Length: 73
Image 1 (cartoon, rainbow, N blue to C red):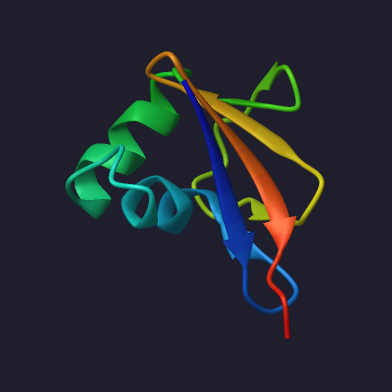
Image 2 (spheres, helix red, strand yellow; image 1 turned 180 degrees about the vertical axis):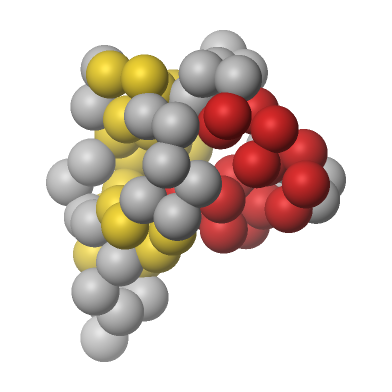
């Protein structure tokens, strides 16, 4: 399934994105998933919990694809 997520501001941190989309129920579980290498950013495993993600990037986690888009002002 694909999710479109509107980024308000310049970026969102990877751990915050997983929580905001409901794919992770807590910061701890988001950090664990990222540390275990279960999250891909633009096709590459990313283990940086606070990686700054910007519109145009794509995150893959738990068989979900999250497309980051700019929030309309």
